[in-house]
Image (cartoon, rainbow, N blue to C red; front, side, top):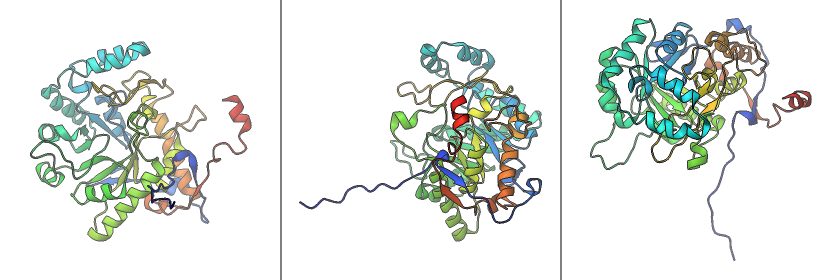
Length: 379
């Protein structure tokens, strides 16, 4: 009997399966320009610290901003539920593994205190930082005006998967075209992994897109829900949507690859795949300034009925400045991310991030194992 047509699958790739091909021309790394622009804001470091409670608090956001990057504060996390979140953070870090998920579900069940939203925003601004805040789509219409009134600079609307067309029982959900008129600040939206979803989101007038579903070190959405696309393919597809939108509108909307980063080489590959910047969580959770005290957990972990994250112990390896600029005290590539990016751009002959988008990439599953038997034996 003839075989009926079936669902066709295409191959997709993650960071560990590809490599960047050096260019025919090289440039001094110091001469590269790695600026990230998000509608009126220019960041000399194209890296965002994730909106996770183990990564970003007020002090971390201020420090990250002064170093040239941007940290995003989660306005639905511990920072806005507790007057003294440090006590809760310490309790989470000290909890035995078997008790972590119930504990997280308990501490995140406390209501959000709206007065703390304004207080946290104002504290970041008073400290001289650019203030980016994150919230779920369901709460954006309520919390965004509060954050805006307090002086927030950038609004991040983020959930596991966000689209421009969401169906629900609500008679009128969040409409991004209306949100752009409601708040007078750049709006970053995430997360998505497909060409179509990315293009539709850009057409609503938002300022930047976060790319990535489930790649984070502390996220288990891929295991629990079975959803996601490896980051290199997701970035390539969304970069194609960005370029298409640029052609049709004349407006450039940066895409920011979010999650799955373990070392500087992954950052370089994301940029070569088409990203304008990167959002990083677990690597920053390893800094001395991180509020997680050497631990990290996903923001979907406290879900009351379907937790999609796990607390992991990442340890503390260095300062935030070391992670970004070195000098590196470890050899695994998790420090001096900026140096790694500039060096990779230099050997590819890419003077700017957009030039780096043109770098050739190859499928290379042996890129981290070829000739490395001694390193593998000692790891």
